[in-house]
Length: 220
Image 1 (cartoon, rainbow, N blue to C red):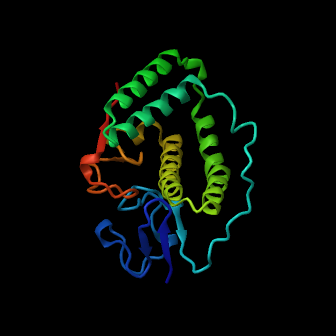
Image 2: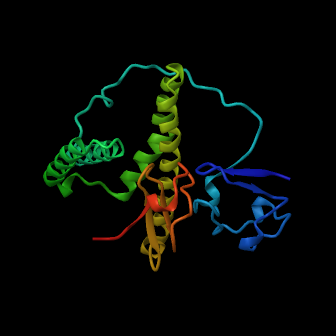
């Protein structure tokens, strides 16, 4: 029987074992698992699972050169997000003065951000697909050739988080506000993993930090 792995957290669905705690009997084939079933660890959908195989992944030969898109000027919204992330990085290193300066920059750029710059859900989904299909394979290849273990680790986390965002956006596109009704949204402070459910998981399925680092996000 087959085994399928969650592309986000690595959970293995074994057809022989099933998922009895969630009503999936041992011996249940993947095709017979209900479409509404979710990964027990991270909440990913069936479409985020891939069959395990022993075939090694062949790395793509990619250029290190930057194209014009790489060098474009960032929008105010992007600059605000960048500075906010840098502030969090400084906080983790106990550089409180630098963190405060980055937070001030983030607030400044956010104040300059215009709603006109915001795109639609369709635009956001297209950008995420582009990241998964093009950007991550490119930067993974560059980091691998440079033997940059730190960058590779960050990219693993980043790609997993991007996949869960892609999954959640696809669900929101189908279900609308019903997806968020009578539930909670949590975000990992370390890697950005997003979880929708009654309570946050005990550990982040991506970066493995404890629940206390997974914060509930409420609408303002």
